[in-house]
Amino acid sequence: MPRIFLSFRKPDSRWMRDRVYRALSDRLGVDEIFKSGQSIPPGADFAEILRRQAAECELMCVLIGPGWLDARDEDGVRLLDRAHDWVRLEIATALRAGNRVVPVLLGDATMLPDASALPTEIAELARLQFLRVPETHLPDGLERLGDAVTALLSDTDPPVEPGHGTAPAADHGPSTTMTAHVSGGGSAYQAARDQTIRLA
Image 1 (tube, one colour):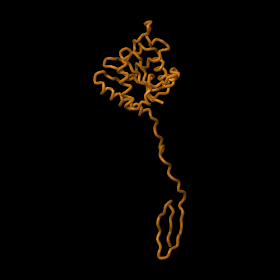
Image 2 (cartoon, one colour):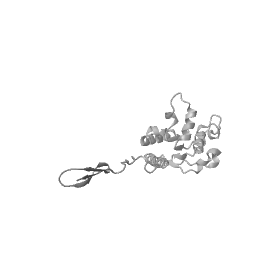
Image 3 (cartoon, one colour):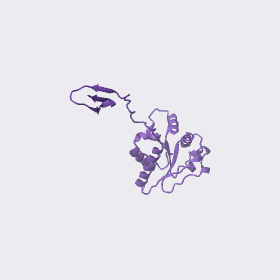
Image 4 (tube, rainbow, N blue to C red):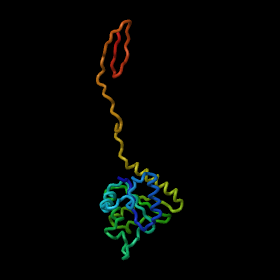
């Protein structure tokens, strides 16, 4: 299952969003990134998949461009104010699950929304430290984003328990003493499996 969920609003900063997806896919592998347009197969229940992925991802990157906060439908209603808005549902699901959620600001001037401008269930987003992908020096910004995301995923990896992943020591059992009689003097030497053979 992909570890990173990209949450985005389709009309908002599409070209930068696609660059972010390609950069993270190149860095971590396409199977590690969930992006609805690429990751949901035809005929699948997209609503169920979106909810499950948002609940089970290790890291949700919320891609916020200049038009993210105030995007509206044909009736002039702000999309975030609709209870069934998918961006709102994705973020709320990840926050309820206790997943790490990181706002990623697209562009040089995009600001993190104020909590008062967000629905209550996702108001926490305004308090979370953000990452920025600037339009100027975009390649450097994408590289820094990849570094940060890689580090965050490393933080979520479960600790390795002592001895985990190592082969158990072989139990050789008690030492065995064997005596062999040979002619001409005697000595003792250590044999395999802690068996001592005394030559007499």
